Length: 271
Image (cartoon, rainbow, N blue to C red; front, side, top):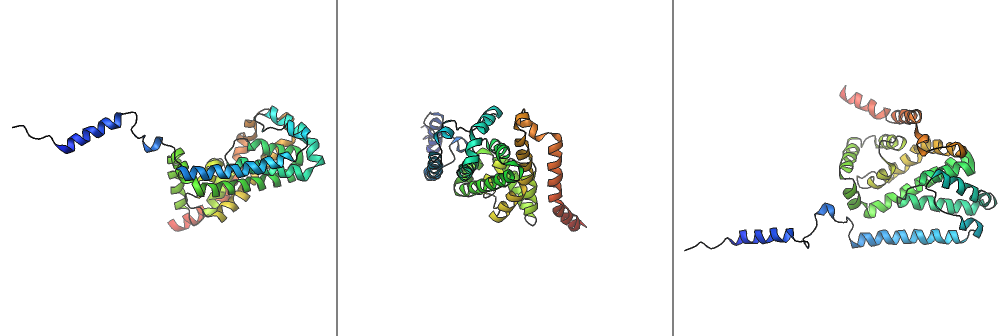
């Protein structure tokens, strides 16, 4: 008499067949990381920002509004500067409101092109006012991105940069005592992209006051370089020219100075 077939084996075979079928569930790493509520929250925040930005643009005169677009190249930026120069001079308050809203919107939702906005600030407002504008907007946009990531960012960052997130989390854990110095180093130098820092900081439990202060102070050197380049916008041939070897060396030197207290503390511990 034949032995009865193992029920468990039969179920395993059926499960294997189901996994091969087109209707089988995708691996977790391939699925979209946000659930329905998280996605809805992101869309709602985006809609609120977009509506406010649209209302600001409606207050602009037709001559300035019709030629308005986000620059993607240096040629676009030069054309935008020519179109907005008169409007910025005649209506400085309205222009600054629109400029700030656009910059913060782009920074919050990770829209590329804020470097062109920084160059534009230098071209229209000079070094001092340009740096104040850029640092204020970059800090406000980064803070807004920080809180948005705190709301919905964990699955997204874990999906996009799993290895980089693990590395960042380990580095933060090792430097809890001198976290401000380390965050300053990251902001001053191009060790990690600012976009990643904005999104990952709340996930690895970087306190907001440290994140805010490091951003406010740490972005000043890069803002100075970009804004100053905006004064000679006509001579700039490529965005890559902003960060040559000499400039990067200076940034890393400033960044090294910011982590000297951490290094000295480690030396005392080992002694």
